View 1 (cartoon, one colour):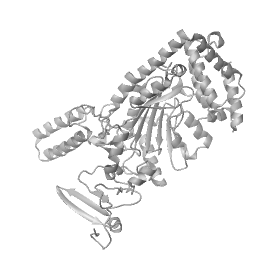
View 2: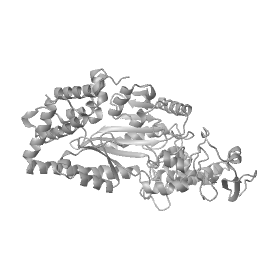
View 3: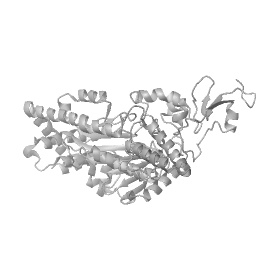
View 4: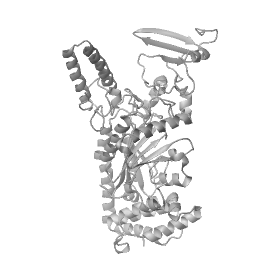
Length: 354
Length: 192
């Protein structure tokens, strides 16, 4: 297992920099595909699951994708390793669950490409990129799809498009999403308005860890909801050229409004967050993420001034993943209970924000 | 209604339209399974096509115009509602009558795919298309959705094969041009 304490220390490449990184933390494109000739996963026997894995692995081995691709038999991983991969956004919670045959192919060393096998669908191709880079992420995912499809028959209907286990993904099977950092919109009380507007435009808004996770630390995942009847390029154009720039502009305007009209309040809020993170002896994940979000805002707006010279936004962003329980236990190289994790989390954050 | 093969009540109704001729079979569940009309359990490993425009539509329960059991995997609509997952690709055909309103609800009224099409669905050999694969663009024109284009290319390819075997080379050339034009139109590049 290559995801040791070393990779936990390294953080995630897709969280480092990129275009519009002040607001757009990362971009992701996910494709759902199923192979012809096999039932979907709810009806597949363990033998059929193995056959799907074998077919996908054989196809991968015959393409240039094989180079730098690491295969992981998920059912053989420990709970901690599974947790680490979920926290790094390399696999979904759904893939992590259960002991039936399932696999994960990860592009190394940057971990920006993954192929999940036997998740909700036979195949889930995912490409992650730092910052606003949906075009690149789409191109990457589509290229992988082409290479897989060159040797595998995908379940496809001219009417419904790519056929998926859940009709919410049928059609293009594509989910394009961006992780947005919107602390100023929360501080100015406008976040609900933006979330409603996004929903009205057919977008879904989720938390840092996707479906079912609450927005933590002002980080939101915005993604297309509809997958049928709209071409990938249309979804891409709408998100990358219309919706995301608009939301980013709202956030930037809210940041400027806070700076010009409520500078002291903003400085106080951010410096309190820094103070708490620098001095706390026990930290919950929610507390850590909420305050790291404010400190990230401080580094972006230069509000921290002499308080934290040299502290870069991406160093703070990396901590968002590293304060999660799987990463903490990998870093400490020992299993920890909740209280021990809170203590170690506080120690880690204190050390980084000195 | 009685089963065509025994005295039991017919609960599986098959309507086939092949070569323009309609035929009906009314069977009880046991006879339907024995004749392979209704298969409960894992689907056969080699079933490739899931769209059967001319194939059998299996209906169960007498009144329902559409099937409520997938003949390939045995999934029922009630089972789908409970699991929130379909059993196999053929469920989209077998349960279409029930699924369509649901699909339209979750997909904002859409019921026709627009977008990428697997190269193999166009009958191309792999790797001949341009990067990104064939794409059916929105608004290509009235009546030129993915279904029509894919079906038309398939039909033209069959005609092309016939023209070549009949040594009608002029016709073959114009068919080849038409196929290339259609494939280009859906973004497939120089496919032939």
